[in-house]
Amino acid sequence: MKSLGSIRRSFAPWNDPDARPYIAFENVTKRFGDFTAVNNLSLSIYEREFFALLGASGCGKSTLLRMLAGFDEPTSGRILLDGQDLRGIPPYRRPVNMMFQSYALFPHMTVEQNIAFGLKQEGMPKPEIETRVADMLKLVKLTQFAKRKPHQLSGGQRQRVALARSVAKRPKVLLLDEPLGALDKKLREETQFELMDLQQSLGLTFVIVTHDQEEAMTMADRIAILDKGEVMQVATPAEVYEAPGSRYVASFVGNVNMLEGTVAERTENRARITGASGAEIVVENAGDAAAGNTVAFAIRPEKIKVSSRPPAEGTANVMEGEIYDLAYLGDMTVYHVRLADGQVLKASALNSSRITEDPLSWNDRAWVSFAPDAGVVLTR
Image (cartoon, rainbow, N blue to C red; front, side):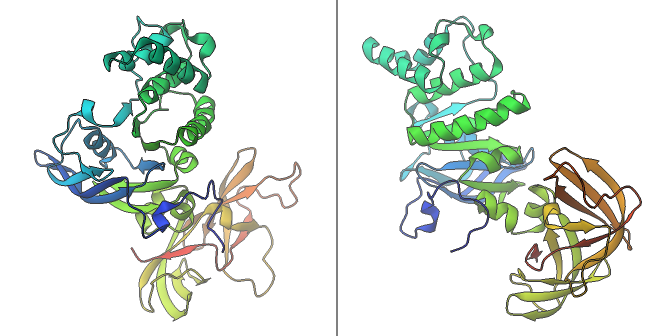
């Protein structure tokens, strides 16, 4: 069986019709006065899943997290955790813990005191606290920093202290609200993999809120794309990228070229689209598009080939234009090719060798081409 994209792990309970969701949002609506932050939303999250809520500012993702944590109550609908309705249960009685972007460490306490704080509040015996704190320090690789204060740590180390404190109480669910936003790019990338490894070693359910597409794509088993308080698509990272369900999802996640046209002919899964930048496009991922439908053909830049010479006769999906702009990024080169009707297509080529066999520069004539299965047809 072929799969879209790489598979991080075989874990996929959402494909099991008998699997029961661990967290369930059932027709949840949340209003703040006249503003509807979450609109009749239903969503299922499974035990031990690393789940991401992804969307632009104001889409409702943080509101969902706050309702799950107990800081806000739904206006209507209900939220279930392991079959239990959470309405009316205060935050401190819910088997969840929340890690904020600010980390909120106590500046006057040492690393080990910060981690132990919640355990002391619960009245755990001192020997057990010492053992648990030692385990947490080892888990996040901070044993040698146990006696330091937060101001003596780097940003990444403070993030790991906050994480250790969050998981020390062994919550059933860990909620992460933009947890890596304060880190620089390189440290953020390293920490993403640390979080993934930690989540799998602990066997906890992680729900992360982020507006960073790359962060969600890297860490999550599944992603929910939100817009204006509604779920636009829930799928694995590869499915969201390779098979977006709508124009919105395709344009929100990653770079994409969108060519509008009309389905002139439909046979089985193949379609012929006309009117897209004056060219005829043959596609094999036509979805539910019917003949006569106005559709968008979405194709990612890396799926498009750029050449200074016309492709061989009979090659499908060929368009002629000129190099409008280009950017050399080291690992790849990004080309902007302006077609005859003025539309600009983005194409990217991997720089797999130090020498370019087919150099292209500004204002050069160029031909773009792509395979029939390189993109998808979108009717929404």
